[in-house]
Image (cartoon, rainbow, N blue to C red):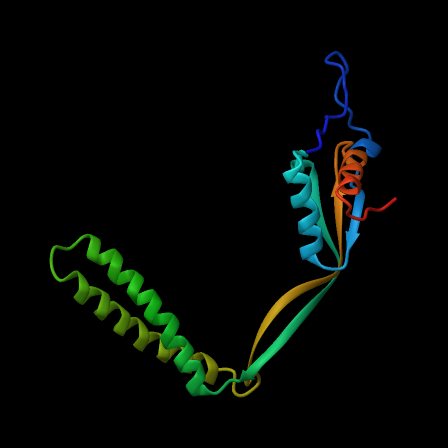
Length: 170
């Protein structure tokens, strides 16, 4: 276990706000987020004050993965599924304030929600008039992840990662 000390500043000295002290200083760079997360986790395990650390993704790209063809039937089915969940939630909320058949409210809420969800899913897809006949999911992906330190903790973070056998930026 490595002991990390805060940068020594006497009590009589006012806090530093100069650009060098407040800047983000890159401690390590990684090709994927999991490696950057492991580095910060290792510092945390060793007692480092990780509240002065950030993981910064660079060179962001929007990736839209096409998951399949979207028909009016599939749009209606997706709307029915989300509507059923919403109706189930509303049935639970109403069930809290009733003394009657709580299970009946759940079933009725899910059925009504599914019906309305299917209608809105169908109409929503029909309104596009075929300009978007596919389903997809979007995500942001970075090509590089930098572990950075603030407030003068860069050198301590570098030495902590080096002692753990993880690579750092010189």
